[in-house]
Image 1 (cartoon, one colour):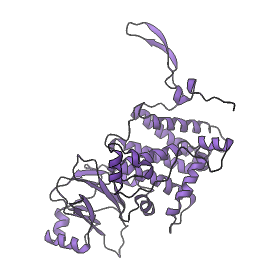
Image 2 (cartoon, helix red, strand yellow):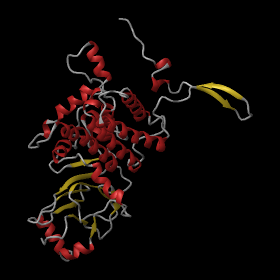
Image 3 (cartoon, one colour):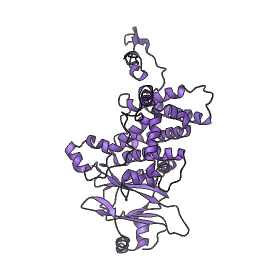
Image 4 (spheres, one colour):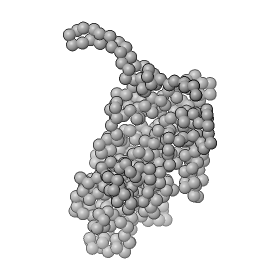
Length: 405
């Protein structure tokens, strides 16, 4: 096959009007569409669905290497399997014959391939968003997460702990659909047991409240699959394991609406945002985490139906975690050992706090009015008292108590 001028993904026999997406851009195919050219170096994700109205989507990750004077731009090729309604690998000979039947490579390249982009209007911030959202994703992580040499994932792919609770599917349907899917490589987070084996008394209580030890244990337990020929420092290892998983899961929610990935993303937040000691032991990690979280929340409206309900009721999960994390940061105020890295954590959190205040009207501080005067429609002034914030503030009937055993 003749060499193209740019890195290219060739898609053979795609039906017209199916749903197709590359990274953050989604579109319906046309009869003349045969693939994508001018692909940028790095990791990409392409997905399809037989119909825009169907929830089941399938996709695969692929890597475009950096340009090299000694190597021509790569040509990747897939073909549509009408029986299973998905894209599958095809041989170079099959791709060559297909291109020749369409008039040759130059004809196909000029008329049937669309340039890679991330928005219909070419806005710069959207064009850069994908690289920001995949900063910590590595081929080693994709090997482990997808458990598939082709890095394939579908809407129905699931971690073992989420198999029985996929919305819209009965237990029998879950077994039928998931039984054919490869299990996703999750981190193995168990929020009901975040202390070391053998811990008792005060140690167990502290590790249940402050999940710093558990976060480090997650990195240790999941670092083996990232260590095959990869020489990274401890800080980068934390980022690759935790933030890389967080990025993949968020993007699989964004593109495939994968329920299990949403649950894993929420579990990661529930661990990281309930750490205390680790915040000041790994401040650069936490600053990077907060920066990533803000970027992901900014894309939350791109998720079909929303990332999750962000009202005061539905958003209580994240709002409560952020309020607790803010209290952890406030306890550090005035500490003599506070340095630039510590300040970076606080500054990144302030950016997250500002964003959720503007977007959702969330107040994460404890400065709220419990009692005050309210003017009624007829002008009468009455004194009112609210206990709505007691649960989040751990006060009133929600205040902790000491029990003598």
